[in-house]
Length: 390
Image 1 (cartoon, rainbow, N blue to C red):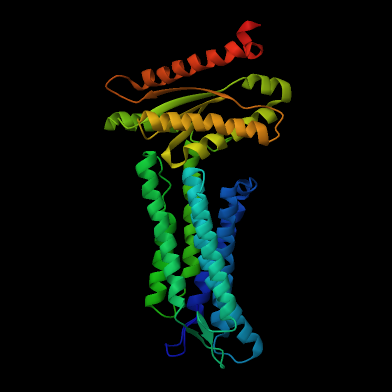
Image 2 (cartoon, rainbow, N blue to C red):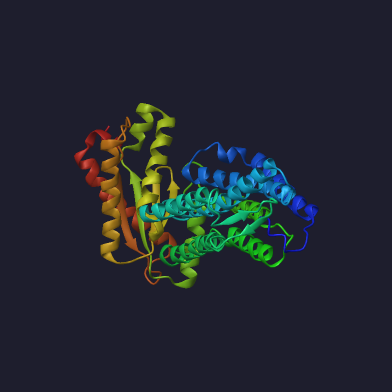
């Protein structure tokens, strides 16, 4: 954003070139990730919005510098509206980052946090609309020169508070959810923070927008690296990650984790009756439900086919029972309200992880055995689904 003319004259090339590099970087990232954005998950929607705000900021930023201090109504409108968009874009990008980060890390975002984030975004928009008539955030003089007003620092503080919030969420998730809550928040935080600090210290250097573009590049690179640990159908963690995590738990002699094996009941009948496309949909919906219930309490893994493993970062009987009960209840709600042609039900078995008692293979076998005990109960009252009875 441009500054008052009490500062030294800026080098327009030094402002334009970094931002155009940011535009090129985002264009290349978008073209190289078209396959990702075909899947319009909420996570991807917020990532696309983040890219949009970064892209438009890289275009608008040098434009407002270019006409700052030049007379004329058109130049006035560009400086006024352009800087308004930069304030809104930077705040909105921070909000989109938090929405993306929470959903990617924990599969959900709390209703309270959603309300707070939308309130911050709406409040910023309202202040900028007021600023068009009463300069409280920034002003544009009669000679079309931009200058800060007191609420400028309010917007800056809001951006850094949102950034700090993502750091708190990350470490809270690490503490509650185990070791693989590993998505590196610093790929976003460091470039954005560095750009803001450097631009504040050195006039004539425009880095906010291009650093936001660098942050987007870091996010997409991290997502690409995660693919080795992700199941392509459900986006849950996969068996490769389970092996990695259990070996890590074994090495550290972790005794704060409980494993739960989940197996969809009568899943073969869904495939046989409705086809594999509907079967895939059932797996995806089940994964979404499991992940939303577990949240930051643990990690959901697609183990094989219609089998899932949840690693809950607790060994309290109350916590485990509550989690399993909530999964069953939510599946029942889905069956009543979603209107799918199929019904979802699950058999579960749990075991507390203790490497003084179990090897890794024995632990997996134990939760598998307990799950099948639960499945026997299901088939006893639903004989038509038991393949062994035919």
